[in-house]
Length: 343
Ligand code: SAM
Image 1 (tube, protein in one colour):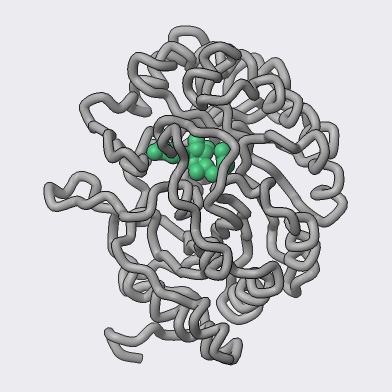
Image 2 (image 1 turned 135 degrees about the horizontal axis):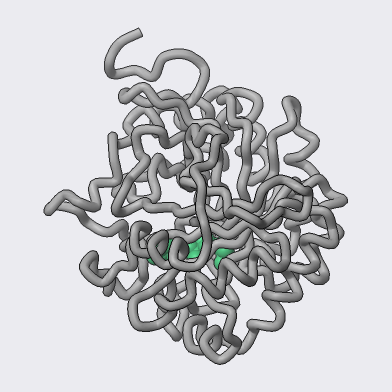
């Protein structure tokens, strides 16, 4: 073992972390245009020949699970429900040995049709993104009139047994910064587990300003004015969300209701990060904010063996930066916007 070579079989990095949680982006396209993520007119989509085919995605996930110790696979995008072969991809991944946990992060549009087939294919859980309880505001934030579809998607996920259904919300100054309490009331009333995510500098327009960001502390203060929150006794481990129990409320399974805050900017958890990312065009990113990526598609299409692909992946992760560096004055936003990385 040397300091310049990844040791062992897994996805270790030189700061002592080991990645076991894989985020796979299945497309950079989306049917919403959330202002903190995509411009109104959309983006130049990745050209089709550069996108991994279903068989290529499954092969790379297989390499990650069987050779690199990945235990959780989360499908994301863009909007992963727009990927036509999604149920078949989920089925193939859920059939891997050892079986990884399979999860999906989605805007929920289309879940009324797909939640059942996805659950039957072996999907374990979903996170549905919803930033407002108000349909008119939803139209303003996402530039699409699909609020009812998201609510129906959430209900369909619960109906299909993809529980606990989690909700992700981003609060933005002057747009929906008064929604912490209404969103939690909505989630509690339906048995969904809500997580607030601090807005990160990942928008295509590069308009993010730290001073304007609604912080996790601010969100908690709003929640505490309306609810009693107790520290969650369950250990956080590598999970991005810090969670609290909401006194007096129960989740659908009878466990205490929880709410979480992902304070990626004001309280980074990079030291415990256990994630690795694969983009829809086959690049490994060691961090959401990486400036560098490692192309696996080229190697795969040139006939690399599974072990050669695993080796490239290990090397990519070995160079994972210690932290995302948002607080560093030299911080540069990644060239790919969130929708093309996979959140
Ligand atoms: N389309 C799917 C969805 O809406 O969940 C999956 C992709 S989306 C990029 C994944 C998550 O990233 C969503 O919960 C979204 O709110 C969040 N997200 C996007 N841009 C963000 C940003 N700049 N800061 C924080 N979260 C962001």
